[in-house]
Image (cartoon, rainbow, N blue to C red; front, side, top):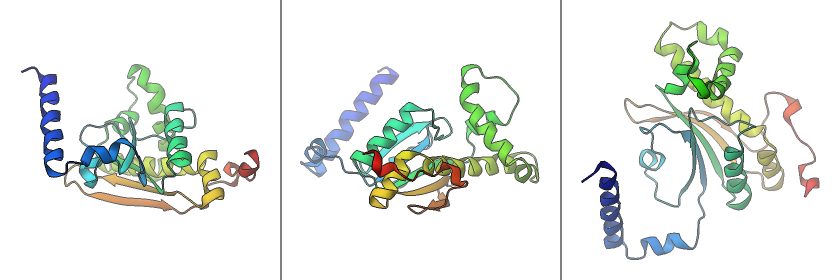
Length: 215
């Protein structure tokens, strides 16, 4: 059996097990999608959202990219965000990174990685914003882990700066925003930051006042 065929074999086994346990398992998923959570996570294969939160299909709407970034120029992310917030009416958005993130480690070096340099540049900006705080720590894992945490928190604030989130806050007082970090060495998630609807932004210039008037 080829490696990719093993995935198909396991899929059939998994589907059969679900139906054996609950004959209506898949029928319930066909006609409705009403998750309460949007998960914005890292693409790292060691951090599968459903596995580490023990949630079932249909419970979490998921977007993943390298180093869990929320960028105002990323139309993929913004499309997912708009659909989750305005159509699914998500109640909570979680930005979850992880210790040992290769993207963050790469951004802390001066090495060129080709095309991905443009993506990692956003993490370098986070480093520059918090350089003094990071460089007060010993070189090595302590600095990397601090930047990982700061990057997660920065992405939560980036969410709050979007007109998509602010419009939802004005319209329905939601969703809540959360920043979490996952530890690869013990599998435990650590909460870092929570933003309540209509929470304070890091600068008033990012606040929009007339979003509901736009229709």
